[in-house]
Image (cartoon, rainbow, N blue to C red; front, side, top):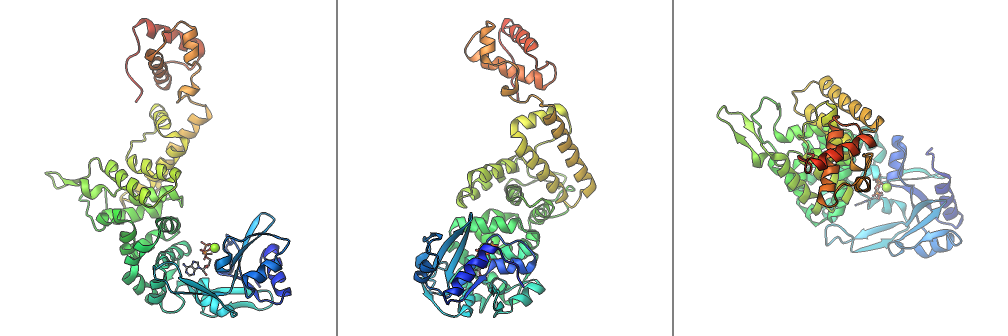
Length: 452
Ligand code: ATP
Ligand code: MG
């Protein structure tokens, strides 16, 4: 017995009462059987689009997908996609069916779905409909195409990436025949829209066995993210690293929390290493300035994949600064806080921890202890509301002008100088002291030096 939300049960009942078959289907059945909370409950029914419109007359519906058989029924605040049983035909572009045809048998509808674990339906009356051994594969932890793998990937190349994504998310393995077809057909992923690649790859990267899956399918990644190609098998010739660049990247990914920006940044942080690599006279490898080159590669990858702006900026910034020194030192940490902001600094601390663990030469306890010490210092600075921005300074430009400070460029320079001295803890962040110091600076003929 599957436990399904009341709203979904209501939709099934309304379809049944009108004389049609109806099931919850696909990802929600898979997740419910795995004991995971489904993201959304999809429903399939023998009712045609016109019949659905009659059944849900009086309910809030959205008709956008109706031509392809999908009606969205909104109950409470939750949208439910209700789709007529259908088969899909002709995939000239390796992605979209040229035509959909409505059918009467749920098994035909299940046969068009990508993987056995995604091809199960359930209703309170019939229980589980599992025509392709989905339950068995779920139990064994296997991703397997419904039908002939090469044919199914030939129809829609995105399925290749979905296979990797599901395997990484659930820690499943990919069945032999399905794996062979993936290795043979991944170049067709070039036909898939960048946004779809980005979404699937993002989910893959956050999967619990992401590193292991990427280790098994580097060829797929090279097709969709050519920036990673040069890392593969690239030896580092340095005592700091136990692994080549690609293996290091995978170990670092494995060590990082499943946060998307962090995982993307780790995937690309050393992409510039091969290009900047030099061997010194002693035969030791260096990659001076690789952060900047990696950041350029990350930038072009983010642009090509049409990444959302916030993640894009996090990723390129983290990649560029991944080697930035972060000593456990009040004054330096304040500078970093000023440069990066709290959120990104926290990400960088965790990225550096994963990066260190990924060398294969850094004891876990040491890396984690360093990260904890950095985070604790950061928390202390935030708790005391340490001044790291002009906004937090207890005087502003107007105060200085009112105190007779000359206007113009010098004003801004004085404020910067005050902030620097406050951050250096040579000047208290107190109004009187700041005004006095501003007066001194004006008499000295303007400030010297800049905040980093
Ligand atoms: P998620 O948990 O990410 O939502 P999902 O399996 O529900 O995973 P959806 O994209 O929501 O994925 O698709 C719902 C269902 O539709 C799938 O479970 C599968 O049965 C079918 N499906 C989705 N995309 C494809 C595809 N490209 N080819 C074949 N069937 C697909
Ligand atoms: Mg879904």
